[in-house]
Length: 205
Image 1: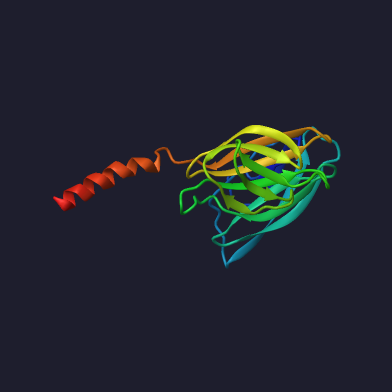
Image 2: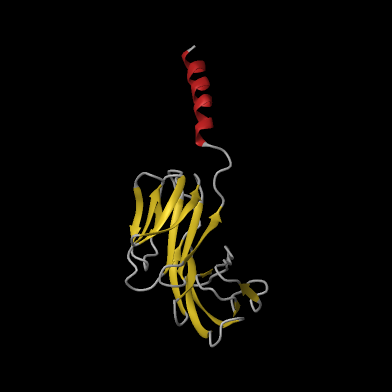
């Protein structure tokens, strides 16, 4: 669950996990439980969501989880609260690049969200409603909504899986939170090169 709103929430559900009736989800926060038992291919669970500090924010409903599939909920809406369910993945990219899901909670007409390597190429350019997970080069990034730069210090590293929450609070103000879903690699792939060189030389000799 990703909270894209400036509100703290209390979440309760009948998911078969510990403390399922007392989950706290702070503003721009994140909650995960990676392994949930599912029988017969899929299951439907109910939930109740109430705000701790935002008046009239209370929602109840259900969501479906499928076997061998990561399911995420995004708390969104610049006015009324809405909950968006989408297929997610915590798995690392096969080619080692960082994986990024941009979760935009921006006003209609604000323009596309773009990620730009500092002084270089645009690596992501999608509408604020896109939930597509994409791989991008490891680097520091600037974040733009339409023509406005809203952040210039978002770092993604090799092997990491990230969720970037972008929330519009006023016409010109945004909150940007980069969440690490899966930790990046602790060692660079470049350290493999000397090992391959030694192995190759050994085979030649």
